Length: 307
DNA sequence: TGCCCCCTGCAG
DNA sequence: CTGCAGGGGGCA
Image 1 (cartoon, chains in turn orange, purple, cyan):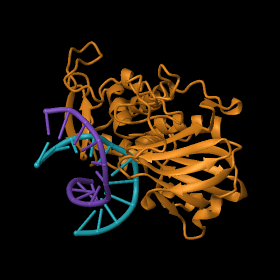
Image 2 (cartoon, helix red, strand yellow):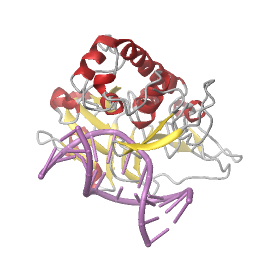
Image 3 (spheres, chains in turn blue, cyan, brown):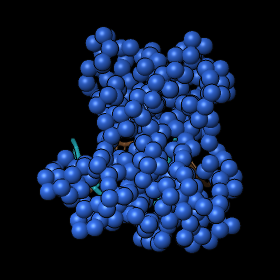
Image 4 (cartoon, protein in one colour):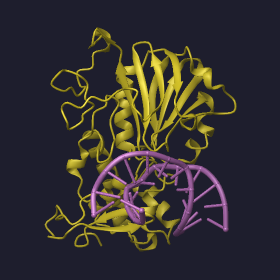
């Protein structure tokens, strides 16, 4: 369930490890996971070098030399994991990655709770992999919802996924006034639907929407037209607060999120309501977290302190 | 604007 | 074995 903090964590990890590396080979194990725009050939990326890695909403952009880019969406279960080439069972000097989770034998265990766990790469969920100069980048995706798309860099703004995205939550134009305006345009929608709409603000998914509403003391079911200006101001800062917290803790690993080094995030330990059904609210209200279904999504809130 | 679909794995 | 997990596209 990668949302903005998880995607940002992956992007930062990839930036550290794959920039400057050349793409030598692309292996496609699941055809539907690999797409290309009509203007480019799927082989266009071969022989090109990674210039930078960035993020737009929940989308990942790997910018290549010769003005090509890879646009990647992890959707629900996608992972982008970089493994350096091994020489004699040890990482080469230039590809050493001390942050990798290792088991007792010093083998990579991908942050698995079982110390002896060793996952094969490619795994049965690897849909695409890119062989780079010093290692391999694996795109794993259990549920096959995600994709890797080859595009010309100049066409990215017109890409059908990118062009629908709203404002970045850390853009200085994302103000409380902007959010107020968006809410006024959706008076009959519940507030959770507004803030998790990627066309409004890009990056909040189910987890961080529930968390932001908790910190702003707003019940997810509240209709847009009932939200006041002071509440909007609180919501605006809560959105930035929960996203920053998520990034600080390297994202939330509840199902299968892993960062670019195969390590899980820690944000699940700091969630106030998400995945805490029936547990006591962290506030002083003595309420218990409730879980309801809203907009077809599991929705968590504290009935005592969210009005 | 809300609901179904795309998929797979896992909890109940 | 059923239903749920939920990002986002597409459709009525």
